[in-house]
Image 1: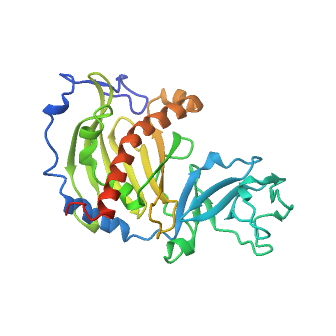
Image 2: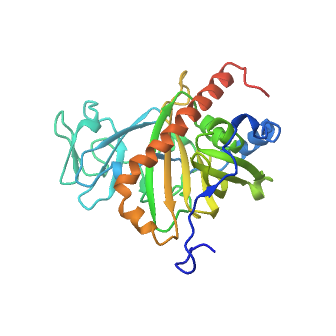
Image 3: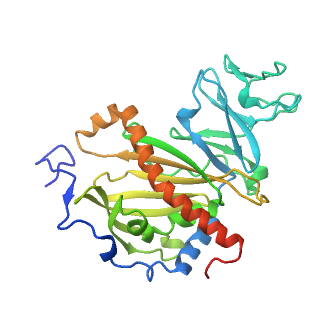
Length: 336
């Protein structure tokens, strides 16, 4: 009996496998990972509305009292900063006066002051400069770019359901690859590659139920996170794509239930770019109802670099996967 509510006998979350994982002996998954099934899931995800919202980074990257932060989305320069009260501001990263890069400017009492000639922006329209709608969900910051997205705009982005505020430990990892957002999303909509491509992290992976169409568009996956040697943490997780550039893995059973890993793919280059570049912004929000998890929350500043390092190891491989997919697609050599 596990201690999930503070009652009963405490149990260790780790399990010991009978034998050390043998990579070559695992059951092949290529028959289950049908290209048409993955392509259909990608097509359904691509058809969902985004409201023209793009993830641009971690909330804590844009600090109250700090300097501006520059980003590029779809070939558009963006600058972000916070007002004196901490409200997120965003707009063009090009000064309307003579084109200075506003990311190199200063924030003085919540006002962005251009370092070339002193033009001051408080976040409202001024001198030909217009703000972009921005949203801070507590973990990530989003910017709405209607000219880039070309969809019907929405008031707020599609933010996945997460553990209750303050109840988890979050970390955000960012990497950039030479591919398009769909290549990143396609990677995440192929859970079958997990224990083959990432044996250092996953073992005993089985897709218990693939998507059944728009009404049940969920990958249900049983997998064990490998800790070391024969020690693993078995869980059941669900993969969903709530909008075209986001895939969410949510643990539904086992240790860390309700924890999520959100993978957001943000295009850095314009749609017509010959060599596209995409930012992968991955937010990990870990939660647990074990009594000892309060210690983890208190140690969050120490844990975040470790969480980012773990995500970085996976994305070192997965970006190679996504880049390879784009290269084959762009040259007409992609199978199918």
